[in-house]
Structure formats: structure tokens, C-alpha cells
Image (cartoon, rainbow, N blue to C red; front, side, top):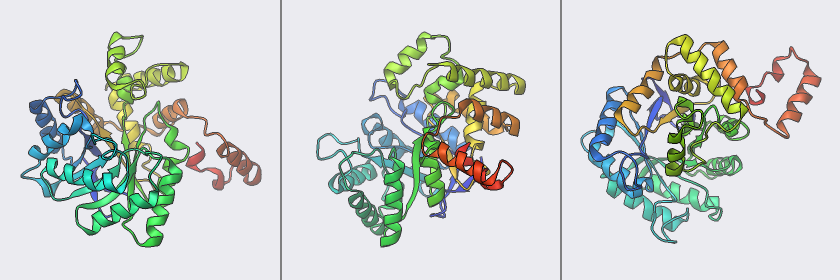
Length: 350
């Protein structure tokens, strides 16, 4: 597994595939027990991975507790990131206020058995807390040595851009990265989030690269397993084959997989991993296996290399309408500079 520098505002070296641990534990009524979680963790490290991502809300804190046991003798060889926002048990221990952040970080450090986090993420926008309040809390935690870096997960681009610029201007701890959902079905991040991240030098971590399992192909044709998975995880996470666009994407994945003699999920993960290779955006793909075999299957994607034609085919079928003003800007550039001008060949409009 290759390593890369996470964004342009840090020197942090992370593996190209991160291990998401929302399935570590069974407190939600589904997930992996302690023994299975440890097998997944060890297998990931054996493959060369070093980036472990969790959250205080995952399995009601059980995920962090299990990871704390697994990392005890190897903490400094790993990048450990966690999140706050949803893991509290009351009105005053959820959300993104300074009070919540200071309480949440102490609880996470205790469960993880460590005295610092490598990356601490605001898990989701609460629609209430001023961005300055979050930034000041991040800065204080960095200065106190309790976190090394800070980032935002599931925030709109304008808020992250504001936060990044404000932190830089005021000399506070910089924002180094974002987490966002990104896969062949869900590409809304192409509109604003990813161009923003590239412009601000932020690393991007992509969660749900298989669209909740839909891109494996195993839930096609109204498979009853899809219904039970949607009930467990929610319809917003399990995308499903809901229309012609999704069907075309799955058909293309199946055809490419057959040509390469690999699985559909390997192709889907290879697309996410390779999609931004030639841009200025540093990306990490976040895996979320529930079984050791799922992780093994996911890791096989590292051996898959898609051709330019295959990437373009999947790009075309999965492309979204960027809407206004992006379409208008692209059309205007075409009129001004002409089809052959390199000035209009901007990935943000493709």
C-alpha cells in the first residue's frame, strides 16, 4: 500500500486506504464483535495501512474502546483520527460548541487510551455553532498537544472555505482536510467541495466508496438483502439502483470487471483511488468492512489499474449536472477561448 502526504497544509504521511471503524462493535445491533474487529485491524496493518478513522458516536463509543485495546503497543506508528458532534448523551454533550468539543475529546482520549489524536474532525455541521468557536477550540487543543491536526466532515464547502481562510489569517491551527461521501453514484462533492479542497490545499478522505454496498452488484434486481441493509444503515447511506443512471454505472462496472477478471467492487474502489491522481488534490479512500473477508476483497482493489478509457467511461456515466453557475461558466469559456484552448479543459467542469 502506498503512502502519501495528506494535503498541502501538513506533512502527515498516511496510507492511500484508511480503515473506517463504524462497524467495530455491536452496540448498534449490527457490526463486528471484538474478535472480528481485531482480525480486521491486524489484516489492515499487515497490508501496510496506517490510517485508522473512528468517531465518538460509532457503536456508542464501543469502536473507540476496541481500537484503544488494539493500538496499545503501536500507537506512535499509526495515524488515529476521531470525530465529535454525535457521540454525546445530552443536549450539552452533542453538537459542535466549545463545551461539547472539550468534553468529547477527553472522552475519546480515555476510550482510545492515548494522550493525543492525529486528526480531530467536526463530524457534521450542527447549524448553530459559529465557525470561529470551533476553530478556537481546535487551536487550543493543538497548542495543548491533545490533537495534531483538525478537519471537517460533512460540512458544506462555503463553511469549510471560510474556516480554512479564517484560521490562516488569524494564525490559528490550520484546517488540513475534509471527509465527504464520494463514489460513482454519489458525486455531489464535484460541484463545490472538491474544487474548494484543492484550492485550499486540503486533503480529502472519501467515505462510503461502495455506496453502501450498491457498487458491489450484490443488491441488484430488488435483492431482499438490500432492504435489510437499508433498514440497518438508512436509505441515505445505501444508495440503491434507483434509476437508469445507476443501472448504467453498474452495467459498466460489471463489463469492466469481466474484462479484467476482477470483481465489481475492485473496479469501483480503483476508480475512487485513481480518479484524482492527476489533479492537485490529495485523496484517501476510507474502507468500512464488517468482516475480515470484506477487507481482503477491498484490498484486492490495490492490484487493479484502470486505463484512461475505462476511467473516462465511468466518469461519463456517473457525471452529475453541476448546475449554475458552473455550466454557464464552462459554456462562456468555450465561446471565449474556443474548443482547442487549454484554458477550458478544467476538470471542475467535466
